[in-house]
Image (tube, rainbow, N blue to C red; front, side, top):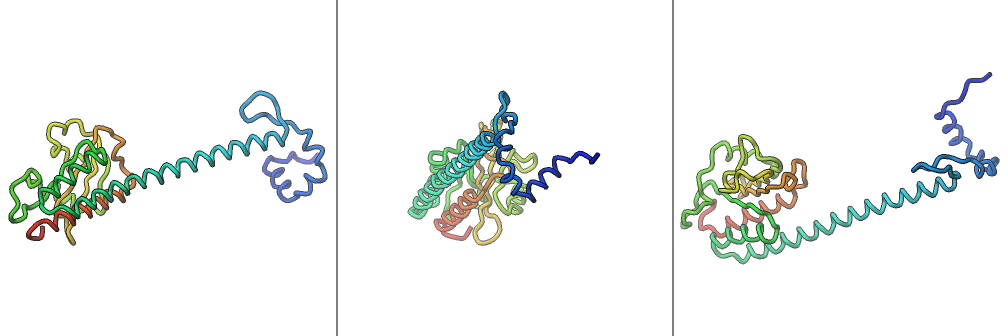
Length: 225
């Protein structure tokens, strides 16, 4: 008596001998297999139709997800464009700061926004944006190749920049500002939502924000930052 064939051997045989289905077409119509969702047995043809419908639903779901991503990116691009146009028209350092805060809070709906620059440009009044920043945090900004996103870093948190809201911040985005070289400052975005700024999230728009803000602030100062 020959040994029983394994399921893998049967599958391999059928793949190598496709004519089997032509020779025994009537048998295929008689085979009944369990329905994938339980209950009655169904024919191979009906089972295949169920599989195709499930596959189509999965493809539709993926398409909807891609379309949503595309729409979200279009919205972000439009918001970034509005911010860029506004900053191009800014004539003073204070107006550029105001526009950055205004657009991030009102247009991008970011609840907490803070900005710090390491040094105060000549001719610009003393503002909260020039408050002392620790050497550790400045060093951390220098090491960032792209914006940091995630929970507030234990040793490099900028949550204190948010004043009374500091104790409620659950996620941060820290965006280094550079003017053709090292970091000259940093923008901190905060949220009470742990999922707003997640580790591993796409940061291309945050990077563009840092570039636009740094260029605008440098343009409206009398001396290079």
